[in-house]
Image (cartoon, rainbow, N blue to C red; front, side):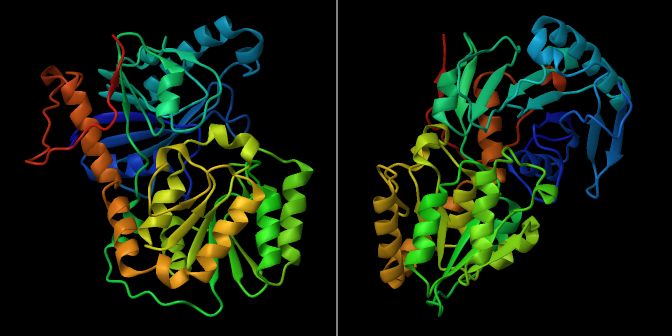
Length: 402
């Protein structure tokens, strides 16, 4: 494992009690013996212009870095060249506050907050976009390697002479523990269907969800995730359509809204569901080539009914749409409901659980180490010898541009 490194992990999502991939990588790196500074996105209030504040989290050796640029962020759109120069100064202020030499900068920020990762003067610069992008990026960020959960995203990153490697999403530790428990499945009465995610995200297909809720009045639909703007730090749309949909859900007698749930509590609640949903709009599905929640769903062993997700095409343990229209999704959902014992039988459940356990964050971190070693990026001169043991981990769909 990577050990005794000082790592700056940059994210477009702040540190919260709801763990996404960036948060889980931070936790895994700390568990492996590293010191991690988790760089939150810039704030507009609470801090003075140019101020940087570092707070110890509740986890040993994990520090949260909050900062407010000393200049207005609209320069990023109006004067990109000036913004990039000023962000070099902002990086200096962050480094000065950290007051340690960095071994690794690990950037998950798909919004390209820092144009050049070398400003942090780390030995290794990693770019790791996990969120969708819509135009090609030229890697002028001086990243030594790019990882992503989507081959499509890798294709969108132009990185001449630098390696690009597919690494799937990971399964968090709470889900790992639950997945390893001995399970006895039996159909509940009524059948319980679960969806996990922010209900104010504009990508949900409201029409399909309304249809299946209306067609199955005797089934309970449980939605776990924020649905009120003030409690939703990751809202990307405040359109009337999103709030109209929430109003509809509140009016349905077979719908239960749980609100935001902490990761450790989420695991326990998900054990109670028979079917899981992932339902995205057809017009936006091209931007959704992977989803971290699929592994969490699979770790329960229960059947998943999903819109088309590119990285899971051809997997026989998911009921996945090919065309993503309303009739197709509703038909698949009805098939799952009517044959729940078949889809949640022991063989199918074990297959889902094993797939999830093959993609824990510990496993993904080892695959990342293997890639860094393969491309001679993790060098001896920074005391970064690998300790992977006797295991061999396949680098799936390894990509490198020459």
